[in-house]
Length: 131
Image (tube, rainbow, N blue to C red; front, side, top):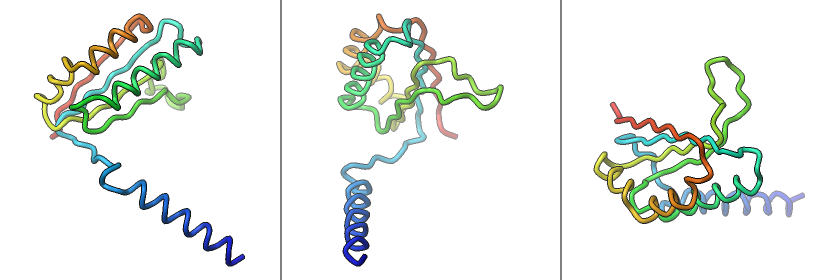
């Protein structure tokens, strides 16, 4: 029992120290938030979803300007006010509107659009400035 306790404690401390390390953690920046919703042409296609996910995750990894990002899919809607019609969402934070403008023209963004634009039928963007 003692061995199990120490093993769990060791694993917990290892995971916590790795996950909370400043090198691996970026704080959400509320100065400028860029929210994008994508509707894929063939949302039931495993191949299209894999291609889109591979491309968008590579884009977020390689972006020079995005401070934080979140890529998600809609959960099953539980209320009438929840729009779950999109296939993927992307939420990105930036230190400024200028950084977001540079992000729009960076190589990583252009490559993502070139790789993935044929997969979607609709994109809606909401940009917000922090108050």
